[in-house]
Image 1: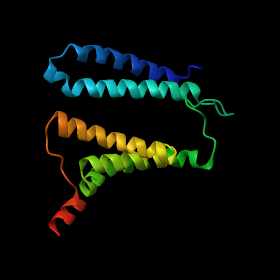
Image 2: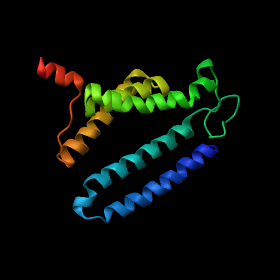
Image 3: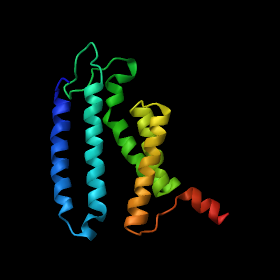
Image 4: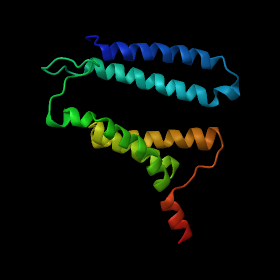
Amino acid sequence: MSVGRGTGFTLALLAVGVVFLAQTIGLSPTGRRVALPAVALVTLLLLVQLIRDARAPVAEGGETPGGGAAPTGPDDDARSRSPWRSLAWVLAVPAMIAIAGLCEGVGLHAFAFLRVRGKEPLPVAALGGLGVAALVWWIVGTLLGAELPGGLILATIAGG
């Protein structure tokens, strides 16, 4: 495994995640209800990213300043890294929540992001979206006991 700047950054975040994980174990049971699953999930995702970085082949162009593989195709040019596109993805979250509901909107956004920007295969993107939706349902609906807001689609179906 070559340690590029991106891998070093991932390692640093993983170390912080492990420290946070150790700190959440010492919290009261009420304090751990959300903190422990959230920190454990982030730590697990960083570990998965570290494994993916280690297994990914490096493109002929070498590594980018962030440590990842260099752009290799027409879709990987500077236009795809536009701050306006990034802003559009961020603004899509509340829009999708308003349209589809909290769990469904976040899950659909995760699916779309993994499929379009992450270029993940359809099954991986679908499982990622379902996993994020299930996690939101579990944390907000089950652990916190809050009512999950529905979106415009549910309001239209229920009202009509």
